[in-house]
Image (tube, rainbow, N blue to C red):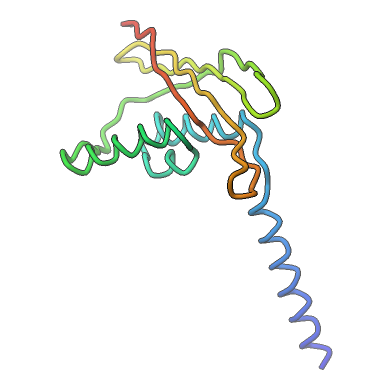
Length: 139
């Protein structure tokens, strides 16, 4: 009998931990870095898409469709490095971050990510809502 209480207690504790971890609100920086990692470094559009909303999601949906149509996905990617340049808090629900994304072979570009707090599904999660790439320079 005592054994079943221990098992039940451990099961309830595991469920509680699992539920609490799924509700963790990540900071804008954590979300933007995860996006940079997935999109630029890992070339994982599906993983990057999960971190987006709005225009950014629309853009990734188009890229995913093109990749499927043309077979663009490749495992031969140059080594990519990213560096946070700036972060600007616009208000409690919006932040802008800029990263320098570079490769040894191709130089660098500045990627500007707009993040918004997504409260539509009552999750209160930060998501990348826009991203713009500019200022590409050769090495």
